[in-house]
Image 1 (cartoon, rainbow, N blue to C red):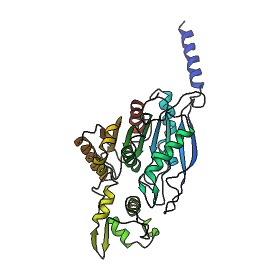
Image 2: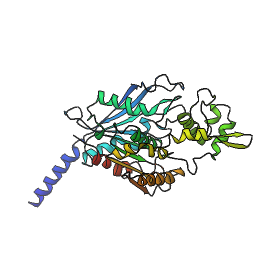
Image 3: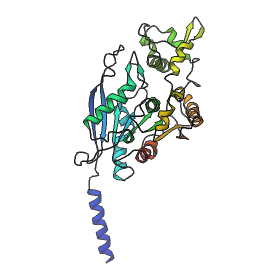
Image 4: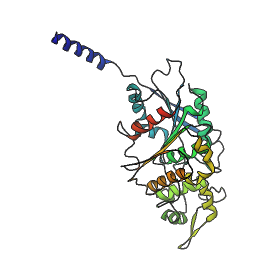
Length: 347
């Protein structure tokens, strides 16, 4: 009897290991964005959108909730999918009942200066509208989605975390839950202020070629093109919050005011109704983030939300900017996916 039982167990194990684990499907499509069309910067309005469809998508009659996942500065839709191995994480999560089936959407919001900060700009194009209008409408039109805000979540990493929080305020009728990972440039802070050496580099630059040699300078030009564009001011077509005459720094308070309108912490007071309408808000950050401003501004963001009675989850963990995000033990798998499984409506 014992030998028969062992043989039966071996047979069952062999059959199980021989079965192919159901896999989802990744589709890359092109979307012609009306919100970006004709932008003076010449940013391509034909954008790629990467979509993960769960196993069985084509065989069943279900409709699915959607998580919109925003990439970081210098990233793209495909690079983010590859870095996180998001399709494999989703396959594992679904096959182990870690979460219920949903669609993941990664839009490409990379620009000439490596980012859009998901902000409407008279120079670069309307990148907030690109996500909140064009991409969402495109996905609802072409895929089997549950087309309401309670079944749509928005998430992002770094610049994408900035964008996720910003879009939750600008489009509360579109997105019902938000999760931001290591959100960048939430406010002015250490390493992200007018004293940055990047502004002196920008003042001395003669062309884009000079700027692209420096990551901080490229980032600040990108922020200025997003937050304070000026199409009549070559070579960067933007106003800077700090300028230099000889060696003297001149702070432009009018430009600072334009940046403040676009910084998520500064936006809170004007968007309390939207924030309080969210079914759930969460953001997290590594205490050892290489971006010095991120732990400080995330803590500040949480305190401001608390001051105005906005319910949210905020968590600091041991780690850097992105080193704890990927893999089966990473926070995308252990935190982000279960968060949306709990706070999105699946019917």
